[in-house]
Image (cartoon, rainbow, N blue to C red; front, side):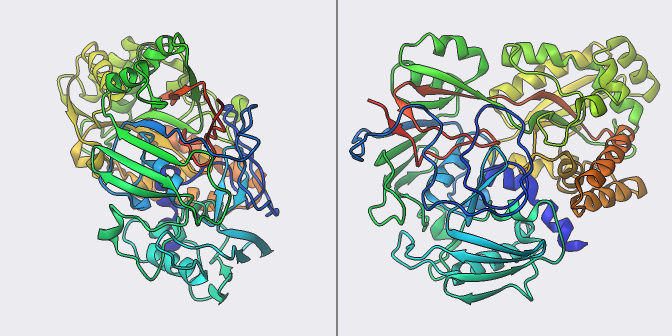
Length: 545
């Protein structure tokens, strides 16, 4: 049980660290960026030797020559380190990590997997696999990649106080390196999320591993290596001539950190950036530019209000939480923040989850069926004693979330509830949300690595406690764990229905909007691949002309 609990805590991190999609095992399928819901995969299937080149209709130069023009990318946030364990969010650092580090296999947006440092994987049974590793791979420091590095990386995560969950269901007593290029992998028991978790485990070099050194000078197996990293300024990469796979079409990538939306839009306007995250309000402007297009991607992610439900606190009763939920005009927030180009989920998590059934789950809770109702909200606020109190609304400083917080503050004022907005920096915000004493309402993403609502319900009460305790919470978590350990899809759906029903009594979070990941991209670029979390890898991008 403890191992499964540890593994569950990985889900929030995995989404930020790995290519995301449905459950399954490696298959040779390129990702989809259509925003369609992914489907669950089943057994492992062999993949080709090369990574997919992307989805664009244009092809890279026929003569195989790489353009000498660098790719300039505006990134919205820097975590101060290039350790994969520290990367999170959709601000761009995850994409940097994916461009230099590699896992055993990638998981694509359609739920399939594709081999990378592993060349194949044999399924003995649902808890036993033989992983065959790719030969001839070297790290950027020249050290050869072997099974010892895989075992080291698994042990590294296994002993980590926060990241041990990525290997939480691996049986370390049985799992062994058979030879330099073969790993005998055993699981303690079936889990829906363990194989996707391994797709998030970026492999380290055992011989040279040092966290302090790797923060600024990573040692990796990927197609690019770091030439210069100045914290909060830039990261420059160049293609590795000794890379095991095909040389990337673009030999140099320059990431520049621009925290303000206006900075990134201006960089697009004057042509300083080829790619940049932009706010939805600037989509029409960017689309009017001759050399840029806009990409909007959706996945199992939603902007969410996390609620501190500590007994005796402002939201200690479900009536108080329902008052808050009915007081929030989600459509107005979507109209202002996203220009109306998104929707409000009709259940507690994203409707892009693979197991969302509209007929079964949409509006099953009265709060979602009723929607915005300030009169009812005020009545519940008065009954629960919420009126007159001052709530703390926490944000990470990102412009969209600040706007959401300001609109929530206004909505609360209409029902007689005061609030103040507390701004944290991105580097500390994730940890701040893990301690509910820091806030009453916390605005952030709710997202999942495998696109499963069962995983949402099982993992988030563990990762973000939010003051929820007691028998009701323990039984809910146990049911979520049972769901993740259930291989039969029909039986797992029955558990999901029970979880959704029980959540009505808890309401420890409230989704505000499906999260749209918006990027401005030069029309002269091809080969784009976007994962379920809205991030990408630039390894296969190329200049069309």
